Structures are given as C-alpha cells and as structure tokens.
Image (cartoon, rainbow, N blue to C red):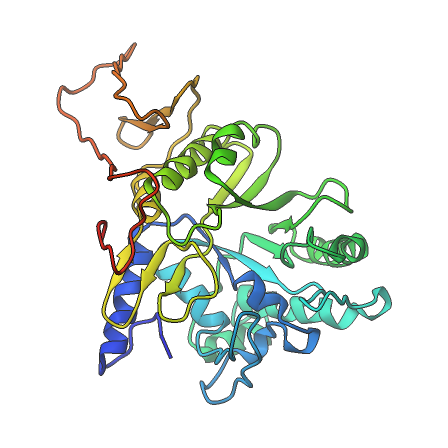
Length: 378
C-alpha cells in the first residue's frame, strides 16, 4: 500500500518513496485539489461508490470496495486524510460528493434520492461544524482535526456528460443543489455538465484532447464560470514538451479570465509505471524512481506565480501581470513556434529593476517524452 502522508516512523523504502511523491505534489503549490477522484467517487456500481463514512476511523475497518480500474481500494487514504493532505500543501479542497450515478450507467431513481442527500449533509456537517455546535463536529475532532475544514467548493458527482448520465442529472442536480445550497449558503456548488440543467453556479469541464485542441481553443473559456480538468491525450504514453506547451497555452487562457475561471486541474496525476491503467500522467514512478514530466515542470513553473492579466496573441501566448504584494512584474510565455522569437518587454508608468529571474522549460524533440527509462526531466 502506498501512503502519501508521513508516518510517525519511516520504516521502509515504500514509505520513503511515498514521501518523495507527496513532496512532489506539494512542490506544485496547487491552489486547488479536487477530491476524492471522480472514478473512485462514482464506483463501478451504486453500493460500491465512495461512501465517506466507510473511509474514516481505523485502517482495518473500511470494507475496501472494487476500483473502477483494477483491484480493490483499501481506503486507507480516506476522506479525512485527503482533506488534511490538501490542507498541509496549502490547497483549497474542491470536495466531490456522490449524487446518485455510478459507472454501470445506473442512477438512483428520483423518489429514492433523499438518503443520498442526507449522506452528503452528514458529511458536510462532520467537516465544517465546530465541536461545540454539532455532534458531527465532535466526531471529526475524535478522528483528529479539531478545527473545521474550510470547504468553499462542493462538486456534485463526476462527468455527468457521459453516456446516459445527463438524463438522470436533470433531476439529480436540482435535488441535491436545492437542499445543500440552502443549508450551506457560503459554499459554491459545481455541476459536472450543462447538458440537462440550467445555469449552475459553476461547471467542471473535462477536456480530454490532443495538443492542437488546446492551442485552437485558447479563448474557449472567455464566457463561463468553470473548473477545467485539462490534459493532452492522443493517446500519449507520456507527456512531451509539445503537449506541455499546449497545456500552458490553455492555462494562460484560464489566467487571463481569472475573474470567472475558478481554477484548472491536471489529470491524471500519478502513474505507477509497473501497473498502468491510464496515460498520460503528471508524475511517473516505480519502486525506485520518480519522474516529473515536462507537464509537471510546466505546471510548477506557472503555479509558483499566480496573478491576473490580459494580452494579445499570435504564435506566442503570454500573460503579463504584477504581483500585488510586492509589485513584482511577472511575464509568462508559451511558444508553439519552432523558430526563435525575439521578445522585448516594455513597462510604462513604473520603475523596474535591471535584474530579473528567467525560468525556461525546454527539451529535445517535441514529441519525445520523459519516462523512467528516459529520465530527462527529473
């Protein structure tokens, strides 16, 4: 079992490798983390969904349901551990909750939804209420975290644009949203499709696309309040510099619309090279090595400097901003041109230092990836 939280006693190489992976995630300085994973949330069938109260308490207690991809989930890294880890790395959690649809294509009937809504209410009470206000808060404190978690965003289900899901989402979304938004007015609730519902507060789009899509759709996010899970696939086995540049162009589009775009997440994150069900991924590992892909390095480089801005574009995509706390000028650029481009940066109305820092991500051939066997970018 691979644990991502530091144990009290580091007693094996497995723990050491897990600590390195955890540190790699922390080094990204993520603003947001969506949890739990969408497929884990939905489960293969309704009884084997992510049942939050089955993931808390002693490690020996969780029943361990089947996973979507392969094998069984020990649930040793449960709800409290997920939220605590997000908190430890400075990320705001986007809490995904089960809303009545699983991967066998079956949905909970409308007249049977109430127990599932009640399940989410109890979950949010455990996570957000104080010890003195609610016995559910006392349960959380008993599990470890004495202070409530700061839950600002709740996402209802996962990828409800796939297959028959939209038809049932037309009644599932309002059933959950109407109850939860009234009880928790300070939480922003996020839908996973707009195919069968009208005007949710925000929507989580998953763009599983090739690099050219991200370049051509640079302006696609100019008009909606969204979360985007973005990565390139072709299907690529591993990220390359070509795909990573395309992802950065798409991300620049997020940042220039930061007044309406909540955030963007890269999926999937971790890939055990010896037991792979999905490609590409941000971080590749085995028992000995961890490879931080070009996409990892690109996201890390951009994630360390977050501000708002606007710009005009050709083959060079960029955003120029000023960090408000120290007036640092930040310019982010991503080029799809294989030729050198001369860049001149001029500032108006301010005094700038003649000394600056440049972080440059470059590589060999555009489509050559980094892997544990070709470890260029560790």
